[in-house]
Image (cartoon, rainbow over all chains, first blue to last red; front, side, top):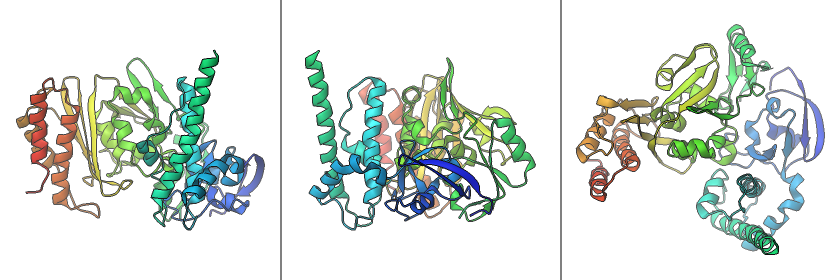
Length: 180
Length: 283
């Protein structure tokens, strides 16, 4: 850490947080210092995805974001997505999609980010959000490593969750169409 | 662990260039992904986040990709990828994960001139220039051979052409560095083939050096191209031996050419594919 401190302000899970930090301090260390222990410190080389948080709504690796860069931005961790993550957590439990559970917070953050991105892109294109393909899911989640190698059950849970979300969206869209 | 001696958030490119040139040891921060892996103190880190370099601008003739555009932005840039045969999407698609690609920047990838770069390999086969705050605009092929200067890369510019292009690479594991990569692009009436991860910087072959004259390369022309690709210099590292890479680069280049070529008859395409099939095993 460098000696000179800088004043930063971030919106962490909806609450404004001001602090004096070293500009090279990682966002990972910052959020953990502020009680967000769901964000795990693991590889610290941007390979494993355990430290995934949302920066202005986009999933990023907090180990690679210096606080100087996070200054002025909105940071969301799993602690701030309790309600939004409940359905996926249920899918994970039903499919036995966790072993030690260490990678689960990062995985959940990225699955919710994928869902969010699909919806945003569909909205921008004026189309109905579509269920991601297996390739889409594998590609989007390639950066989330599970050290227990529990990928099969994780993929089952993700598929189950996405089917529930996007089937509902499709039906809602069809229903809206019928109503017009 | 990377440490910052001091941190400057530049208001504009001129300020950034001034600090870079007058503050000894200063460095521009791109996505910070590669830089942060080193264990050192950078005396002054310059952040260009406020310089408006995070957009892809489209004009009648070209796409101007800002240096702070992320690899994820590049991957999902629909118009740019549609014009360039999706080679940029294909090149970045397997770089670690989405979360990492939302941080890594085009400028960081290109200015670093890393030998393993997938981005440089894909851009090199296209009609690509770079724009530097001090040195101005120049072809990417010229830039990658220049020594590291105290300059700020502001844009990567891809001219609109009638591209037919394809990207191929071989990774030992899904998100690993490429053991070798190749990109073939047919534009302006000629073929351009780049080969990267040799493991040195990517190289571009075009025109007579490549040995392909027709838009629909014959089996003989593809064999010539394979020879040309294999005549480049290769070396060994953890990702592959020199011999393996040399062979692999020929196969990948041939596959990229065949994938990109607009074969009008199935027989011609089959003959070209047969050349690739015959190249699968190391003799």
